[in-house]
Image (cartoon, rainbow, N blue to C red):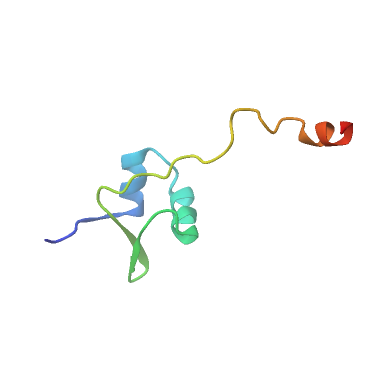
Length: 69
């Protein structure tokens, strides 16, 4: 079975994300890709990685809380 690949710009258009951000995630290893010549090729069906940042506010004012202890 032959795997179909998308270019970085096609993947960016498909996900609605920035091309530079996708290249940065490829270099960090968060998006699987292979290099063909000078261009990256991303396997079709690859999902954009989930945002791993803490958004609950659990770390809000952590310096202030540390100094109170």
